[in-house]
Amino acid sequence: MRKFPGSKSEETFDTLFDGRLEIRQKKEGYRFSIDALLLAHFSDPRPADRVIDLGTGCGVIPLILAFRRKAEAIVGVEVQPSLADLARQNVSLNRFSSQIEIWEKDFRNLPEESGVFDSALCNPPYRRAGSGRVNPQEEKALARHEINATLEDILRAAHHLLKNKGRFYSIYPATRTADLLQGLRRFHLEPKRVQFVHSRSQEDARLVLVEALKEGKAQVRILPPFILYATGNQYTGQARALFSDPTL
Image (cartoon, rainbow, N blue to C red; front, side):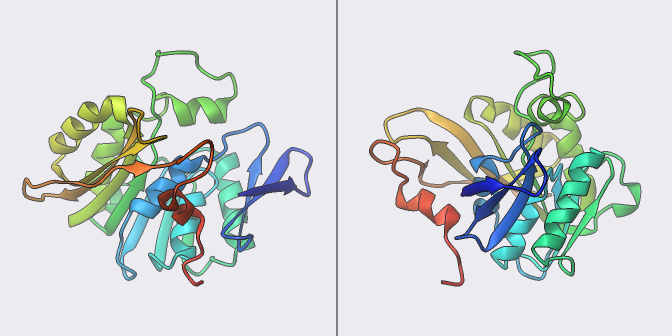
């Protein structure tokens, strides 16, 4: 991922896949991290699926899915007007307007969209409201803390939006794995694949990736761990695949 100055002093352009995907972001607002790449890589929608990304931010996950040809019809939902506008710009910049729609809406209030999506993804806020220091920058605060939407809100929305047997994908702190798995079952989203993400092989897991099936039966696969770094700060082969161009 390379960074270079954008056309506006308060923005940068980030590039992925050897410059083939360009993403405009704010210097001081919420910026995507490797978590978004991990979630997009882990998800496995079918090409014909209708996919929704809950809290899309600058639209990075829909853009990666479209670039990797994982889905042909993707909706990114973002309640913050400035981020929704940025996501729309990024969709247009990368010429994915025929595949990606950006809705400036609250995903907790989409009554007309009940049971219409095959797959849903969410990179949710990791911290409970009132825990730790809340960033004074509003975009970062809403992205990191359960201020605007709790985990319960997200799972309820996913169940509402998904078709029966639709799939939900999420990434969460490993320390809150129990919260995520209990919440999924509460909303009839049965965990089917679980993968822990470690910075290094000798370190405790930092994140957990989960795929759940709406109204699925109880049976889960625990995948081999995903290791980000080998020696020093060199990415492993697994991690390098996050940035690889599937067409090459």
